[in-house]
Length: 94
Ligand SMILES: [Zn+2]
Image (tube, rainbow, N blue to C red; front, side, top):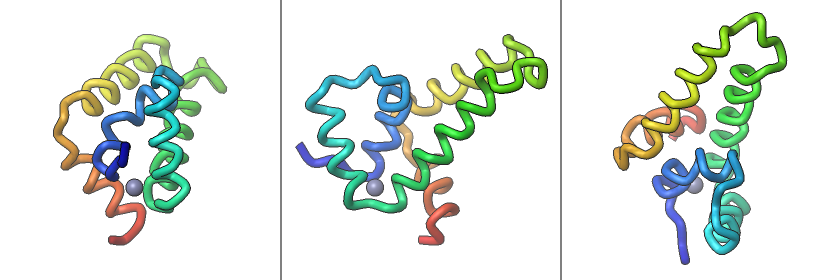
């Protein structure tokens, strides 16, 4: 199973939340081993989640955290990778 960058965008939420099946996760990690752009994006994504999920809970109300998470999840499951490609190309300059 070969993943493309747009597939990584769609699997990102499940990957970070560790919801992927082992074979899918392996395929994703194989892609990451060869794609600096996706690695950079995943790191940024993880940082966003971390910032929004509890280091300083008083800075962001729980309701807002949940809204942010569901917003991200909705975006990721929308099967429209254009937002992701824009963001990714913004990160990598490509
Ligand atoms: Zn990629």
